[in-house]
Image (cartoon, rainbow, N blue to C red; front, side, top):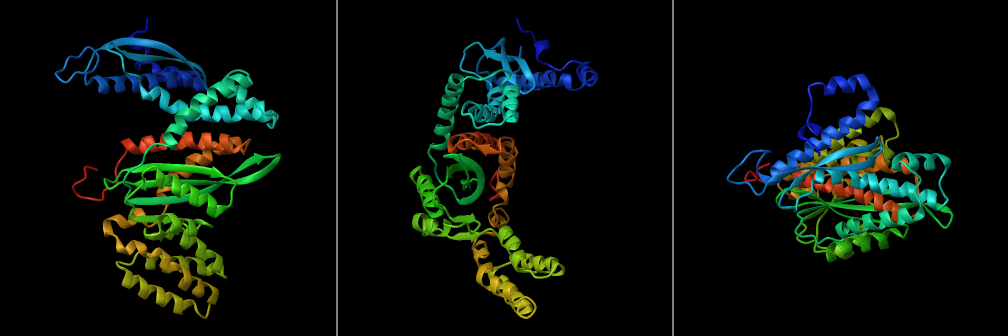
Length: 389
C-alpha cells in the first residue's frame, strides 16, 4: 500500500539529495511529480486530502504505484486515485509525450539500420533496453494517433496569425535533404496564444505553403485580421491565393537583420540598426514614412544599395500601424515563436538527421503540443482592459 509519506517532501530530503549527488535525481523527480499529481487531484476534487467542502466533487482514494522508464532510470510514482473514477493526472503523462517521440525517433534509426553506434547507445540508454521493431511499431502507432488528432483538430476565430519556417535534415532514398517545417501560431480575440498547425515536406515551397494554409482554412480558421511572417520563398503567392484579403505584416525583426547584408562597413551597422528601430518605433505611419525618407536620403551617397533596399522593403513592415497601439508590440514580429523554436532545436539537435519525414513530424508535433498546452494555462496577451490577465 502507498502512504502519504511516499510522495511528500520530508525534512531530510534536500540533505539526502545533496549527499547522494546525481544519484539522488530519480528521487527528486519522483517527489516533484508526486507532489504535482497530488495538487492536481486536490484541484479536481476542490478539496484537499481528509478535507470536506461544499464544493467537493468526489473523494480521494489513496494512491496506486506506477513504474515509468525515464532517462534517469526506472522511477515508481504514486498516482493519486479518486473513488468515483474518471481522474488521471496530466502531470505524469504530459512531460512523457515528447520523451516518447524522441525515443521512438532514435529507435527507428536503429531498426532501419541508418544509425551510428553512438545513436544506438543513446537509444538503449533512453529506453533502458534494446527495442525490437515490433515494439517500435506498436509504440509509434499509439503516439501517432494522439498527435494526428491534435494536428487535425478544429480551429476557430483567430485575430492574429503568425507563420514561420525552419529546416531539418531528413534522409530520403539514401540521400540527406533539408525538409521545410512550416509552423502556424495565433492569438485569439481574447488574447490566448495557440499552436495552430505544423507541416513537414520536401516539396516545392509555394506548393507546400499553399497546401498548409488551405489545411488551416479547412479546419475552420477564420476572421483573421493580420498575418505576420518573414518574406519566405513561395509564401507570398500562397498567402494571396488562400488569404488574399488579409493584410500582411513583414516581421520587423527580420527586416532589421536583413538590412545587415547591405551595410558595407562594420562601423555603420549600429547606426543603420538605430535608424531602422526609430522608423519602426514611430508613433504612426505618417511619421514612419517621414523617418524612412530621411534614412533613404541619408544613405543614398554612402550606401546606395542599402538606400534602394530600404525604399523597396521597409514599408512592408508598416502594416502594423493600422492596428491599435496596445496590440502592436505583440504583432509586429514573429518573436513570440522564439521559445517554440528554441525548444524544437533542443530536441532535434539530439537526433541530427531524421530517418524520414514521419519521424521528424512526430517529434516536433509532440514538442509543439506540449507548448500549446502550456499556453492554454499561461498568461494571456492584454488586448483589452476588461481581460483578466
